[in-house]
Length: 470
Image 1 (cartoon, rainbow, N blue to C red):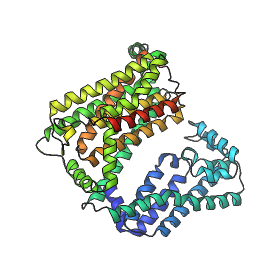
Image 2: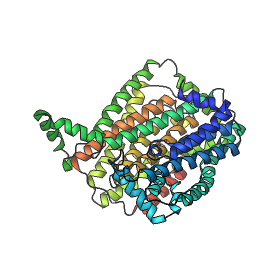
Image 3: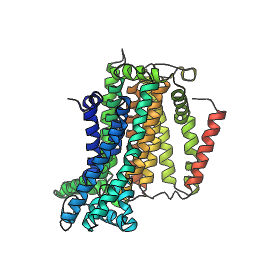
Image 4: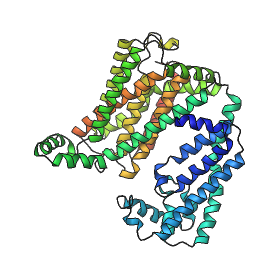
């Protein structure tokens, strides 16, 4: 059975959904497993389904509390009983910093770390394990464990639950919409997690990078080829992650574009489903305002307003390589969007006055957001430690998804346009990063970022007020 269909079916089996939420809470609390399970996302989705089905919130809270307490208790028991062996076991023998970070957190906050740790993602599944390894008294641990679970469960479940209830009571969606939303959400989560997982393993300290380097060293001709490419880049680091991203995105974009063109006579099923859903949502004032705001945020003038202070700062600080590559990225994506739109000539589902004469595929908002926020995340992550680099990328993913989906709410794009736009933006991001590695790897010291951000906001507000949409 398709996993999304199974999740949707839980709405018709309240007991099973209640138990499932308990198991998700348990898994998120377990040592190691909690690092791999996107517990917050799964709990939010499950709670939203429960709210939509009007399942007892008290039962959900009790189930999640019990699961969280059991999960932390099992982690504590593992640390207490295997404290000498754990540092030598996988994955801690490969990532000793996980235990070091958890121990530092525990030593800083003491017994309160059990409570605080529930709300701090990177150390959440590690703190109970460390508490057991350091022989924290069992009664004291269990007391803090239960009390913190009583607070944690409402914080994590109530937003999703009441969102599901609001969805049920205020929005009249077409039949089958729940399944489509769950499928879309699942695909987005899988894509984001896959990107994050591959990025960590393709950077210089990642497993795939080390494996490729080891493969190259086994043969003289491969070693020479690797060195020939590596020496072209500053620091001698081969940009494997950017290269693989570029190749993979290009293949996907070409294949997806060919598929869209082959169905030029009628929209895809995905397009029709999304159009029906967002057409019903567009009648609500907040959804309409959201689509209008994002239309300003992602058009050409909106992007220029947001980027201009940062580009001027790069020139002032003589970050010429960064300035040139940012300008190239924005120019290339703008040119590609124009050429592809007029070459493919796909009509929009709805064409407002300011878009008359413009075509639909690919979405310029989606591709522009991908280039702008994807490159921003890459430049910010360059200054971060290996473990902290995920957060700029996750922030960029959230913004890109928000801007892309707004085009459905505004009604001027098909869903397949957004997919094509994101893939095209990924290709440009990869090429720009490869070129930037070729000429410079100087980290940008964003010390005046609050003032630069303020300048972007003021310019964008002026753009909304004084200039027309384009």
